Amino acid sequence: MTTIELVKVSNYILRDITLRIQSGTIHVVIGPNGAGKTTLLKVIAGLTWYKGNVYFNGKPVDREPPWKRGIGYVPQTNALFPHMTILENVLFGLRNKGLSSSEAIALAKHYLKLLGIYELKDRYPLTLSGGEQRKVALARALVIRPQILLLDEPFTGIHYDYRVHLVEIIKRISREEKHTIIIVTHDLDEAIELGVSYTILMNGRQVYTGDLRGLLKTINKHLHYINVYECIIEEVLSESSLAKINCNGITLMAPLEQVVKDKVIATIPADKVILYQAEKCYPRTNCLKGRVVEVK
Image 1 (tube, rainbow, N blue to C red):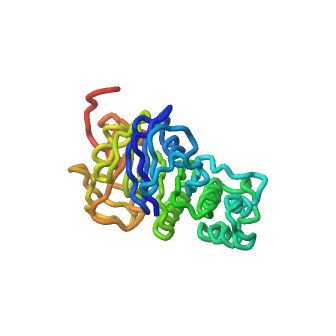
Image 2 (cartoon, one colour):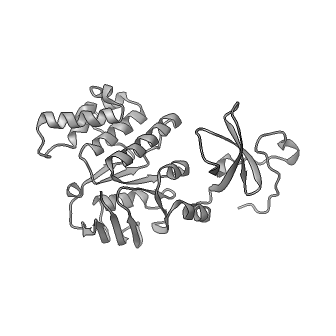
Image 3 (cartoon, rainbow, N blue to C red):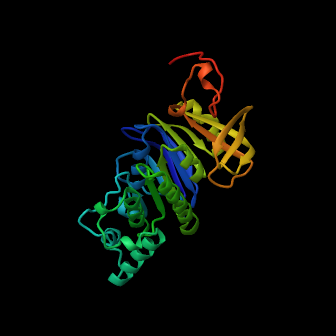
């Protein structure tokens, strides 16, 4: 397991980033487009220029090339080779690792089975769905047995049901393989589900690093398109898979997709909020009376 530490890291996008990520945990980086999230991953991977210092387990790695940093990196594009089969794509990462052909194939098949895509091993990337391609890219990153796993927007473009499945796989990998994992995402739900610690980036600057409670207190200040509330479940309506939740005195109906504790977190994206004239509101679900005080 590897503890990651960045000290005053800057480049053409990032500005004085200093953070410490505990070994064997999942750290989630959140922020709008252009905030520097992908650049931060590339700095850790050694794929872009920077000044400052990066340490793995207290040892500086600034002069280490990418292939010596022990990192598995899954970019947004997956970067699979279209002319190679799925098995060949996964095996590609094991070149020059000192393994025999049979050892490499056995290891590649192990991760294909772990991710539930073993039966796809003889197919080509362009014949797979987006979610299946993402799993192949993840298998290729894992097969080298990395100390650190970097995932750039792993849920983008994937159907909701597949995203839920992928979240569970990443949690399982973290639990069983003990990697230090850094995930870049726009999706607060996945961030909350996966993260142990969090960083918010805005315009290349680190505006928050800490735990979930601190994230929920500060996220609306920086990411105004998200409304986040800590709520209490008042009643579960089993016949409709809905729960009645109380959010600081406001009662809402919310889908209940799994068994949860009494306290929950509700997120309401701004693009899901619709304004009606007061007389047109009722009897709609989650229709609340209010008054417009400012238009920005």
